Structures are given as C-alpha cells and as structure tokens.
Length: 251
Length: 258
Image (cartoon, rainbow over all chains, first blue to last red; front, side):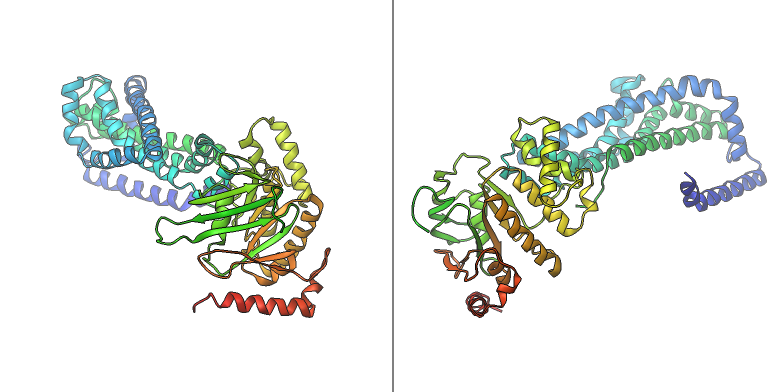
C-alpha cells in the first residue's frame, strides 16, 4: 500500500497541479456555464446527490453490467468457436473486424428507433463497443498456447477436451483479464453514449439535460461519477486477476 | 539385436514423408531395441532422428510399415511410451507437483491425494524432495529437467524416449545430469532411447550407439561402446573410446555441408 502510494505520487501531484490550474482559469474566466471550476463541480455533485445516486447511477450501472455480461458470453463463445474450427474462424473473423468500423455513435439513434427509450437500445450500443476487444483478445490468448505443450499431453493420451482445459484455458486467462479491464471503461462509455442519444434515466441522459439548461457544472458532475465508477470496476477486476492468475507472460 | 517378438521397440520397414518434401525422409527403416537397454541415436541436425521419435510416440503416423512396442503394433494404443522433449515444458501456471502428476491426471482414475503422493514420491526419487509445492519458475535448469524426467517416469511406461533433454543446459550441469540419468536407468530397469548430437554424451551414456549415416534414413548403424557398466567419466579417456569418438565425429561431419 505504502509502495503503491509512492509510485503514484508524481501522478497525483501532477493531477493536483492541473486541477489547481483549472480552478484558477475558471475563476479568472468567471463563466460557469462554459467552464465550471472543479470546486463548483463538486458542489453540484453534492447538491444533486439525491437523483444522481438513487436514479441515474443505478440506471447506468445496470446498462453497463447487462451489456458487459452479454459481451462476455458472446465474446467468449465466438473466441472458442473460432479457435476450435478453421471454417468458423474464416467465416467470423472478418465480420468481427468489420463490425468495429461501424461508427457506433452515428447508428445509435437507429437503435433508439428500434428498441425505444428503454435500456435495450443502450445495452446494444455497449455490446457493440465491447464484444470486439473481448473476442479478439481471448482468441489471441487461446492461440498463444504452445503446440509443443499440446503434443506432450497428446503423448500421454490426452483428448481435445483435456488440451482445452489444461492448456488453452490457463494460457488465455491473463488475456481474458486484460480484455475485461479494457472492456469495462468502454462499456461505461457505450452506456453513456446510448443514454445521451435517448433515454429516460442514466448519467448520460442527466448530463445532456444539464447541457440544455446551460448548467456547466451539472454536465460535469455525472461525468466525474462515470469515471469514478469505471475506475472502481477496473480496480475490482485487477484485484480478482491478482488472486486468480498466478503467472503472467513467462514460459 | 536378435529378431523376436520380445523387442522393446521394433521398426519394420517403416517409411515417413513430410507433406512439404518430395522424398521419404525415413525410407523402409527396420531396427530393434532389446528391453532394458540404453541406446543413443546420433546424427547431424535435421537428419530425421526426431522423426523416428515422433512416429514412435504417435504424434506422426508412418506412411508405411509397422512399429511394435513389446511385440504389439502401436496403432490405436495409448501410454506405451514416455516422451521427454528438449524443452522441459513445465506449465508455468501449475506447481511442480501438479506438473509431474499430469500423466496420471490424463490417464484418469487417481484421486487428487493419490496423484499428490505419487508426484511427491517421483520428485523425491529424482532428487527433488519437497519441491512439489514450488512453482517451476523457482527451479534451476537442471532441476527443471529432473522434474520433467519425474513426469516422464509417471507415464508408467517401460520405454522412454528422451529427445536431447540436456542440450540446453550448461556444460557442468549437463555432465552431472548424465551421471544422474545413468543412475536412474540402473535403478528402474527402463528401456531408454536417447537422441543427441553430442558424440561424447552418446558414448558416456549408452551401451551401443545407433548412428544415422545419411538422410533419407534407411538403416541405423549399431556401434557397441567399448566400456563396462557401471562406468564413470574416466572411461572417456580409454584409447578405444577416444578412437571411436574420432571415428564417429568423422562419420557425422561427412553429412554437414558448411
């Protein structure tokens, strides 16, 4: 803990300096609807704590969690299928890559038309953004297994299932955690984009409503909350990873 | 090498062709190995000696001919030989004990406790008592090879195929591992085939050397080693051994185009 503090100290000092600069600039400009100061943002966060924490934060976390869960199931299934069969790989891999060239923000309004203002249009945006890194990274992880190790097990009489469980899964595990750590912030962004474009609740929706009211601090407050939530989630995943993955990279 | 059904390993007119090549790298090769013997196969790099191993352990299927272990063709059989490749291939995410118990895990039918005990016994036997709970990264190169050998022993097979197991070790570790391996062989009465391109290693370890004289491999030339068992490294200084060593080096160098 102490060491973590010491290694992060330069970053913290630099961040603090930036915030001070921002505070000074905002006070000099004195136009909170364009550039609210950090202190004003914190004040707004406190004043609006009721609706933010009881309505909008849970809504966004719900969308993020559902989207992430669907992405994980879909991504893992695609990765395993592509690893198991060359035909499936040739069929899916290009499509998975192409799906990433779709400008999600541009077609998200369509999702609102199709699925309405409920959570499913947001979930779809989240899934579209996050399933790609999960699929590709886990697929790479499964591929990283050395054929020599598999051959050794084959000489012991191993089946394909033995090789999958005893070599491929452990090899892919560190990759899987990297993928989740990447996907968590992206899913939060996806949910926020979805809500920004059309929703009845959620931090993205709240931020947009404050925008129409020219409440600069009100736009920032939910964004601060979003990043804090994403950081917390990544921290939890990193902790899990430390517990589960006993090795990394060397072989 | 008498003919008979009781050879530990017998090749009968075995051929193999790699898909990318237009000739048979193994061309109707026949040879036999008697039970309990220790043979080294030597040959230049890329001559196809590893291919002989990969057919014996079932990783490659011969194009023609029959391979028998203890008199029975190997087609469709499992667990008849223990294979130890050049790299130790200890899985970094498993403890040393879990690595050593892998053959038992694949064969199935052992409880976790039994596997642990058998692994601990095997480790003690190779001179690594109490190392079962360590991770492979904590072991030195020589210790890792011993653990890999313990893993090979737990396949329970009487025929062991060792493919250059010591070639990545430094010289001093290598010579003590050679002495250690001879001791293991004497105690366990296994049949060992050992691939190497180090002539001195081959002479020190084996009762007779099987030389790959040319590629494609049509025959293995058996040359008995003029040294008694048990032996120590001083036997390498015998005039007969020195002469044989020079003769083998000359034979192998003919194949190496520089």
